Length: 195
Image (cartoon, rainbow, N blue to C red; front, side):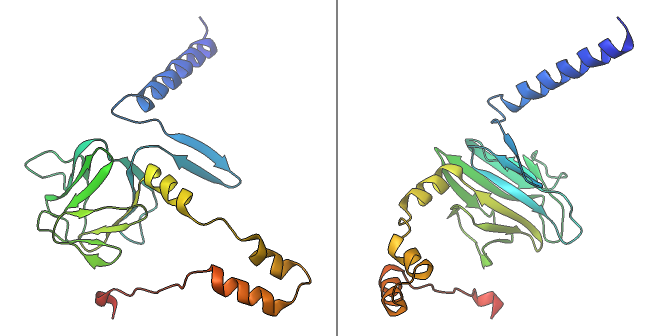
């Protein structure tokens, strides 16, 4: 067997091995979709998207939250951590995230944790889109694909009258009246810590 054939066979077996790893019960499959100039990653499992620990972080990491307990802390913890992180204010055994049948709860373990800028000191249910900060600077986004699908299905359908009012020659005063009655008010929440 010549070296070209050998390296091709090795590459094929490595690719097959990688696919098997991505599809094992411990690791749910990831769909990688090329979109224009970007790359979209999808999974059906609730997960954290690690945004790093500051401005110098250059990677995004996807961490599945499988059924059971996920421990988050430093590498030097006495109990092995499922997700290891380092940074200002990160404790050895910083927190736990528990997945029980798709219901995901953050347990801060008395350490510095916040959700969307609000300090959390007791077990708290995580919902789609939360921004989680551990310590003083380690950020994650929480994604729950099933919950996101449910939320999208509950959104009101776009009103054809509202879009028609701005794209056609109909009376603008009628369009504004229709828009006022079909849209809910938007409230801006500013956490106390930012005031």
